[in-house]
Length: 170
Image 1 (cartoon, rainbow, N blue to C red):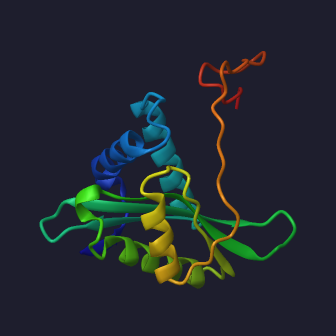
Image 2: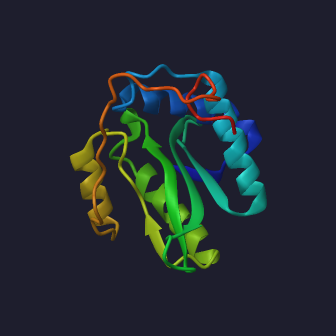
């Protein structure tokens, strides 16, 4: 298993893993929007160019995309200390149990330390094999901090000026 920084040439591999993540996730009831995913990836790549984000792709010995970890630097609202948090962390089902996840986490850890981060924070928001994810986190030195909760809203109420996607006017 090889870990590489994501580049624009890996766009299709990253988007392919994103589609698979979406299909497995608790958010699968929402439609997958290729343009939105592409826009998100472009934003991540721009932030990588600025040095505030990272993207790692796990590639199998056969050259297949096996996993993905996108991360970003940030700060807690109450401190100036730098932290690093994930935005996406996914390993394709056929590569779970391999060393892909551990190698992605090592890459993220190293990237964060080289940028002065004091804390790594990963959120398990997708609901994909949550117990297995928890075991991986404990095995790689992470402690449980809080939890993720979600609630589907029956009818989102658009606000005046909202775009069709509900994300406001910008």
